[in-house]
Length: 125
Image (cartoon, rainbow, N blue to C red; front, side, top):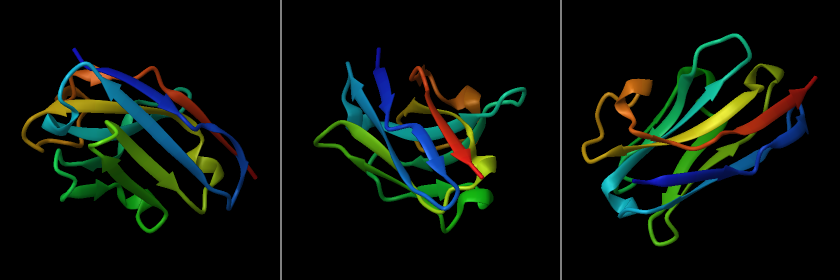
């Protein structure tokens, strides 16, 4: 089992920044690729960014490219999502997720076995 706990969400004005953190425990963190997803009210959960187990490969969905950055610190068992130039359409609950082993099919919810409880991000106009 892997336990994931997100933090860092909150209310911010458009153009502002937030840094989300996801602390992992339970298994060897460096064996897991990680993803950040978000879910807005009434919409499906979708990928935002992903990072390979060793941190060398990352993915960002087009809508956040140039604004968001995913990173990880395997010594601290933590993955981060730095969010800059936030827009009202970024408002959602943000979830981190863990995928054991190979960095594959990272865009899909079904590829991840472990999920955090989510953290709310609200961006006001």
